[in-house]
Image 1 (cartoon, rainbow, N blue to C red):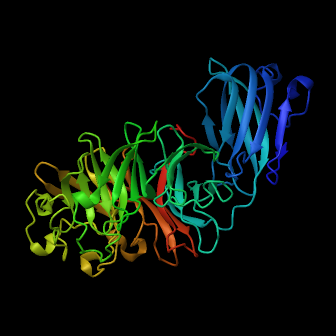
Image 2 (image 1 turned 30 degrees about the vertical axis):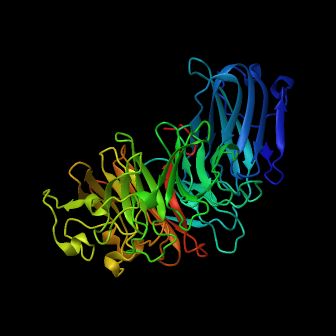
Image 3 (image 1 turned 90 degrees about the vertical axis):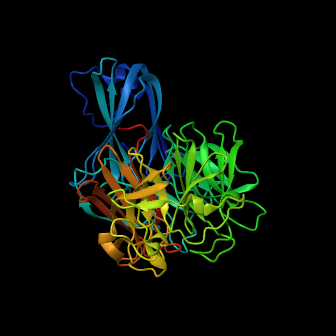
Length: 517
């Protein structure tokens, strides 16, 4: 049977098997009980919300408790099937069908298992899907090995100049096939979606992001349904949202009616939406400092967050100042940036006392003033310039995307990198322990946006320049073995009409089905 995507028809099979209807070809185990003995009804709807053209919703009722497994057969010889078994065992299901190929008659296999994990039977369905939006980019995969982290790539795509569409998150598989996307163009609230640093997954499996256009934080499921939202009265969202270990949300905001912008952080109570804590960076830092930028309004430009649970402290990346660590009561623990001209904070603190001392690989202090002020690199240490995407690793280190914009105040040499540092908060020292990207030079340079992630199970680092210009506007995701720096996966997202020159802000590698391993 075929389900047309044109009108998202609802096809309902009610008591079909009991009435002897033709359900199409079946690949059930011939020794298994007949499916007609327990299936009561079935319905399958493509794009149930109108926002996810490559997803469907399957509703089932059975006369006995079963566990359901879905498999979408691979489209080409170089692609494999996508299989997911849902954990629940029940008689009534509403299940997402994720990972459909575009412009294709997809084959969906539905399997049923009993309480003893025995296969009761299998049915197949055909689902016809529409063409991709022309605004979506082309993905070229150049390296694809078994050493990469499994899963798909969730791209916080910025869209194309003049398209008229909001930002469009999408997911592509290891071969570069787009298998999911959300177009909120007709959504009554998110029709002008601007999620800035991007979309990520909550621990409960849903997606979450901030929307700069509507001024709120949003939780959305994989079928495009808004599950929850948090308003920010008196503030406006920009850049980043981070789910804390207590479930609350840490978010970079603008505070309304101020002369400055992008210099406040809030913790939002997940349940009530109330503000738990505010960090005013004008108090903890020096808003008059002009070393990396002369912009008095956007003097800090907070673009990324991390949370140190052990110390209940936050780490904030400020594109035009550096990276700082703050206590819950907004006191500076340390400042990670070239040492020049920090002066006095708004609360009167001498910020020179908060500057970190860099160490070489032997743990000895680096004292060259030209290195400390950022005019040159030490052979074993260099600062991060106009950085993004701070991430604490299980090793207790901090990973950053060092954009390299205005490096050494001259913009030379031209490269971006993933870089890892070890901090000692008590001794006030910092040591560079790992980097990748310098050797790639301009081919992976991105002066703005971008992301970096560490995958501990695979011991890989993913380096993601989001506004690269090699052979035209593009973004790249490059996964390397942490020990050898061998590239184990690489793909380029080509976007010839990149909005603001940006292809994406961030990419996350994750399974398309929430809670998949």
